[in-house]
Structure formats: C-alpha cells, structure tokens
Amino acid sequence: MSGTADWPEAGFPGIRINPDTLRPQIINEDAVREALAASTDPADPIFVLLVEGHASDAAELLAEARFKDPESFRLRLFEAEVLSVSHRMDRAIELFRQLVAEVHGTPREAPALQYLGRTQYAAGQTSAAVESFSKALDLRVAQSADAAQIYSSTVALQRARDVLDLAC
Image (cartoon, rainbow, N blue to C red):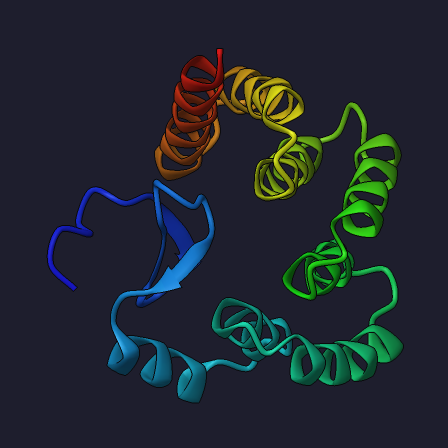
C-alpha cells in the first residue's frame, strides 16, 4: 500500500497502525507471511489473526497458548483484544482496565493503556481514549521507550483529540 510509510509500527513486519482507525492493518502480505514462517513465538499467529479480524480462530490459538503460558502479558492483552475484534467492547474495556490496574507502576502499564485507549476509541469513548493515550505517552516518554512506541502513542493521542475536537 502506498502512503503508509508514516503509519506507526505495529510491532510485526508488514503490519502498521492505521492512523485513522488506530487499528493494526496489514500493509505487506508477503512480509507478514515470511515473518510468520520464521517465527517461533506462539503469540505472532494470534496477532496476525486478530489483525485480519479472525477472532474465533485467534481465540482457539490463544486458548492453547494461554494453557502453556498463563502468565504471558502479551497473551493476556490478546485475550481482551479478541473481545474487541468480536465487537464486545464493554467486556474488552473491562479486561484492559483490569490489566492496567495489575501492571500499574511497571513498564507494562504503557502498552496496557495504549490497548485500552485503542478499544475506547473504537467504542466511541473518545474522551476516555484521549486520557488513556495521554497517560501511555507520558509513561513511554518517562521510560525512554522505543521511538516507534512514542510515535504510536503520539499519533493515537492526536487522532483521538482531533475526533474529540470535531465532536464539540
């Protein structure tokens, strides 16, 4: 896809965050397939299935992976993301809030807030999304996070603020 070079990275080859929807989107199918073929991380195919919108298939793989690694933070995020992709936003937001509370004060708080904000944004809870993205950005800057993560939070916060401004 042309015009996606400035889209924030999604943490997987061939996938970037659409700055309008704030959802991950495949921009290079070949890169995704090559990365999946080379990956040994059980969370990677779950992530790709979620990006493709295949919540039930992702849920099946997630159940197996969580059985083997019940404490995996990434898999716990994906559990709530399955709900979000399934349009069960209230339950997804509830789970993300629980995760944020559990990881408060740790380096995992920023990604949990980013996922929470993204789900709030998708659910039309734009004010709450602005708050979550703002906290995620502040934490990422304070933690000297990777520039791609800071950029992702900045883009998400600006998009949510723009939508909020248009609504007023």
